[in-house]
Every structure is written in structure tokens, then in C-alpha cells.
Image (cartoon, rainbow, N blue to C red):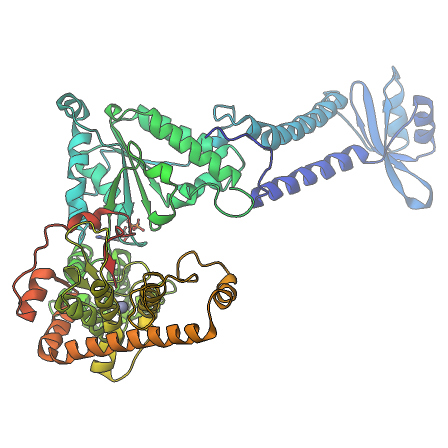
Amino acid sequence: MNKQKNNRRIISLNQILVWVAIFAVAVFFFNRSGVQTKELNYSDFKQKVASGEVSDLTVAPTLITGTLKEAEGKESRFKTVRMEDPDLVRELTAKNVGFKAQADSSWVSNILFNVLWIFLLIGLWWFVFIRPQRNDGKSAMNFARSKAKMQDPSKQNITFKDVAGVEEAKEELQDIIKFLKNPKKFHKIGGKLPKGVLLYGAPGTGKTLLAKAVAGEAGVAFFSASASEFVEMFVGVGAARVRDLFDQAKKNSPAIIFIDELDAVGRRRFAGIGGGHDEREQTLNQLLIELDGFESKQGIILMASTNRPDVLDPALIRPGRFDRHVSVPAPDLKGREEILKVHAKKVKLAPEVDLKTIAKGTPGFVGADLANVINEAAILAARSDKEAVDNADMDEAVERVIAGPQKKSRIISEKEKKIIAAHEVGHTVVARLTHHSDPVHKVTIIPRGQALGYTLQLPLEDKFLTSKSEILDRICILLAGRVSEEVVFGEITSGASDDLNKATAYARKMIMELGMSDKIGPIALPGGEEGEVFLGRDLSRHRQYSEDLARRIDAEISDTLQNAYARAKEIITSHRAQFDTLIERLLEKEVVEAAEIDEILGLAPAKKEEAEKVESQPDQPAQQAELF
Ligand code: ADP
Ligand code: ZN
């Protein structure tokens, strides 16, 4: 990890600004000293007085300055060293030259003034280029102080009752609270002390809120900083800020340190062409050092949030670092209602408003969106001088939030929701009714990552061998989403594209790599999906086997997919009633678990002891789990 320090610097906007400032100061400084000030000797000066060519004199104890009239009406400044000359005042008066006395000798202040500018310049230069290189957070100017916001435990009033719809996450955070309440006792009992908790989930699902609530429940100080703040400045500053953040927290322990958007610093290192990002890497290294350096018995818990757990540097999520992963999913129907309730407490609702109905009409909304809905509704009601927020306000508010800039891409219309439900139920029913497939764990139409909905299948045990029947069933399940769109709506959508890719890949692999096709025979051919080289695939295929075989392979892949499609259609149409019931149930509840699926399909429950643990992994499900 001791990466050689190199001197490449990031040129940020800040740096450009500082350069502009230096330039401006320099111009000002040179202009000032460059003002045309003529030095006259005293006899010349006396002459000019006599000829009436001077005016506006300032007479200091050692220096006389003033304006000098030159040819063609031009004027310039002059100065002369003052001499013992008792008659001067009388002569000036006689010539009607305006003059004033100055107590202090102005050249001293002049010099001081100039020196000050020089110091300023040097200071600025040091500040920008020397100090960051020294990578030292303890220097005089507190530039590297973390911008962390501290929240005092006495003023901390957010608790778990302010966070709704994330019961599982709350449950998982309980022992963190217990620990923070009494770190010493926890330590005495022994066992593994918690250290770093990673909250992951889509933006606005309440990760920050949860972290604050943990602090509130435990009554400890809460320090928060956004990881992007660490990287925006000069080299070394981010690292210094991380250090400072930990120092502050240690002084106030027990405490929670919360880092928002951890992926801003925590992305995999050495990724991308031309090496990593220096500043980010230094900051990440510092974060790792701090993580390793503090003992949990000091009563500090580090929490962080991200919506991209998959891009985090593996070093960050190793045991002893952010080893506790808590999923903060988008809320389901019930969760949305709970969240609406929490926020509705802050406004006056007309009795007609039914939050459950609103929850039904807001699929895909996360906590932040729902908070926004209530807020907008309150504003609308106030604008039309209503006593309380009514249904019209709520409907209008929902529409506004849907139209909101970031919401647009995530929102699912009523019609789309039906299609997604039918598609997912297709996967589910076929997965449950084919004999060589893994048990279905649940089906949901709550979006997750790129998927609009998914059916989760979990195997009962680790498998090392896969049979032909299993692969054929898998292809059948994959195609069932498309099949059920066709069966229910008579129209197919783009939603199945990922399924089709996977199904085709399975078929190809089965035929070309595993030699499982009767027509093609036991043969393994180059150019299967894996080990495929960019651009090289078709070339090598043509080189390695005949046109004729290629044509037969293509036909066999196509047949396999067609047969699987027909089989899926047969399963669905022969169970149409149960199939429709399941779609309805899914639309209503958004998640349907295994037991209920079996009940609707009229089956004895399958064994499903495995499961759960997959849910607590970062967004990538364990390899053997299947999501459609
Ligand atoms: P994240 O950190 O996951 O992006 P935040 O915690 O910043 O989301 O949520 C933003 C706001 O949305 C919160 O301050 C709160 O008002 C509201 N909110 C989000 N999730 C919830 C929730 N589960 N329960 C109640 N309010 C929520
Ligand atoms: Zn699908």
C-alpha cells in the first residue's frame, strides 16, 4: 500500500482561482510601485515652487510629496527629501500653493505596505504549493480541517421512530446502539466489537437518517462528512481532513462518524487507464489507516453510505473494516405508508386523506420522495389558504414529485407496473413448476439496481455439477417473463432483453461447450460465451469448424430456445387462474414470499432453509442465487 509518492497534481477549479488571485495581487503590486513618482532634489523643488509648478503638497517630517505640473498640462507625482528650511512655509503661502502637514514619515509606512504585499504573495504561494506537498494537517492555517459537521448528543433528536419502512436495517443496527451506549461493558463481555458499518441502497432511502437515528438512540455525538468533500481540494488535503475527522470524533467519544457517498473515495484503486486518481487514493489510504488505527473499545463506530457497493475497493470491506453491511432497500407498499405517516405528523391532514391510497399510487418512491410529497402538499394547501392538506393537494404533490428532475427516470407508471408484475410472475410460476430448478424465495416488483423487479431463487445446497435438465429449465424460466407478457397483454416489451441474453448464452454454452446437444453431439468448440475475445470470435469460429456445422449450431440454439419458450407457455396457460391470482397479489403487496406463492399455486411448501443470508450481501447476490 506504500505507493510511491509522485508529484502529479490535480488541477482543480480551486487551483485556477488561486492562480488568478496571485496574478491580480501581482499586477496590483507592480502597478502601485510603478506609479510615476519623480525624485527631485531640494534645489529643483525650490525652483518649481518659485515658478508655481507644484501643488497639493504633503509635508512630512522627512519627506515632501506633491503634484508637479509638466509641459502640455500633464501632471505627475514627485517627492523630495525635506531639508532644514524655515522659510518654506512662508514661500508656499506667498505662491498660494496648497499644502498639508503629515505627522508620520510616510516612507516608513510605504515600505511597510510594500513588504506586506510581498509577504502576502509568499504566503499564498506557500499555501498553495508547498504546504499540500508536505501533507501536513497540523499547519497554521486550518485549511485541512475537516468540514465535518458535529451534532451534539444533547441536541440530537432523531431516533428510530423517525425512520420508517426499513425494519430489517433497524434490527441489524440494534447491537451497534447497545455497544455505543456502553462500550466498556461490551468490551468486557468480549466477542467481536463492531467497527465499520456500510449502509447501502438507492439515494434517498434514508441511509443518512438511519445513521443519525443510531446516534440519537444511543445518545452519542454524530460526525458527518461527505466523501466527495475529501477529494475536491488539493493533494493531501483530503487525507488531512480524514485524520482531522477521526481526531475530532476521538475527543468526543463515544461517537459515530458518518461518511456519505463512500464510493467517491472508496472506488477500487488502480482502476482505469493510466493509473488511479492521486488525491482520491491518498484519501482512501488515509481512511484505511484510520480504520485500522482505532480500537473499537474507544467507542467509535464508523458508518458509511453508498449506492454502489459493487465499486468499492475490496480493502474497504475486509473484516475489521467496513465488515458489517446493512441493506437499506426502497420501501414496499407498507413501508411507504409508514414513511408517509412519519412525515404527515408534521402537517395537518384533512380526515379524508388516506395515506394507504397514496402509498399505492407511488410505486418506486423512496423515503426522500415521500417526504417531498408531504412537503409539497403542505405548500399547496398553504398557498390556497386551506385549513388542512386534502386529497387534491396530495395528488397534485405526487404529480409534482414525479415530474421532478431526478424522479423521472425512476418512476414506474401503473401500466408498466402491471407488465412488470406479469413478467415476474411468469418467471416465478415456471420456476416453481419446473422440476429441476431451485426453490423460489420471493418475487417482487420493487426495483433494485437496474432491475425493475425480480424473482429470487436460492439453491438448497452448493452445486458443482449442473445437469442438462437443469440448464433447460433455467432457459425456460428465463424466457417465461417474455412468455407471460405475450399471454397477458398480447404484446411483448423490451423488459426481457436481459433474460434473452442470458437464455441465449445458456443455450450456446450447453451446445457448444458442454456437448449436451443430441444433434450436434459431444463436442466442445471454441467461441463459446466465455473466454470470448473482442473481435476475435467470429474469425476463430470460422477457422476452427465448417460453415455447415456453424449453421447447424445456430439452428440448434434457435430450436432449444423455441422449445423452451413453448414449454414455458404451456406451463403458464395450463395454470392461468393461479397465475392471474399471483399477479394480482403481487400488484397489491409488491412482494410475495415463497409460502404465499406455494399457497396460491396449491403446492406443498418447498424446503427453504437456506435463503436470507444472500439478502445481507451488497447488491450483488451470491453467485448461486438467481435473479430474473
Ligand atoms: P440517503 O442518505 O439514503 O440518500 P437521506 O437519509 O438523506 O437518504 O434521506 C433524505 C430525507 O428523506 C430524510 O431526511 C427524510 O426526511 C426522508 N427519508 C428518507 N428515508 C426515510 C425513511 N425511511 N423514513 C422517513 N423518512 C425518510
Ligand atoms: Zn425477466
